Length: 91
Figure (cartoon, one colour):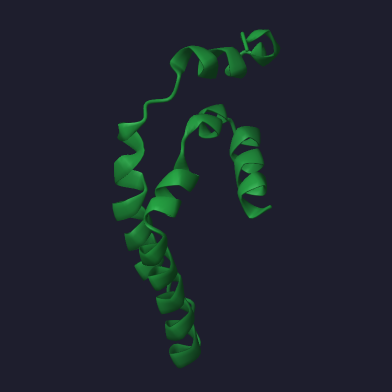
C-alpha cells in the first residue's frame, strides 16, 4: 500500500515516469541491505531518541538510485502517459 501511495503522489506531482522505474526490483535484489539500513535507523532512534535516516539514505543512493540508469524507461509509453493517451497503448 505504501508503494502505491508513493507512486500516486509522484504522478500527482508531475512525475508520471515514476510508473516505469523498477525501484521495487532494486530493493528486492538488495533486501538484506534494505533491512540492515532500516534496523540501523530504528536502533539509532531507540538510543538517541532522534530518527536519523542517514544510513537508509546511503543504502537507497547506493542500491537503488545509482542503478536507475540500468533500465531506461520506455520513452514512447511515458510520453503517451504524460499526454493522457495511455488508453491507446497496444497490449
